[in-house]
Image (tube, rainbow, N blue to C red):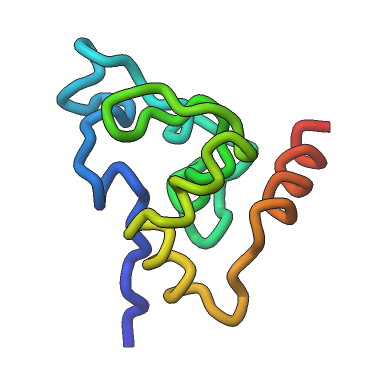
Length: 106
């Protein structure tokens, strides 16, 4: 049985801000789509399944802050909730992901 493909935030939200996306020329590439140190977290590409920990993500048509600054908004997001449900009981808390990213960056 094939495992269902885990979608990244840009695939679900259809923001067009991933490399080669429809809105890159207009709005730029979102840092979530290029955060290589988060690659593989929750089965995503780069930061695509942990966007809530990537500083400067481009959500709601504007640049967001760091994890602490956007914590409240992200935790109310339907994408965050769907990843949390899909990954339970192995869902990683934001601080755990941030520590993993920090270690990967060296």
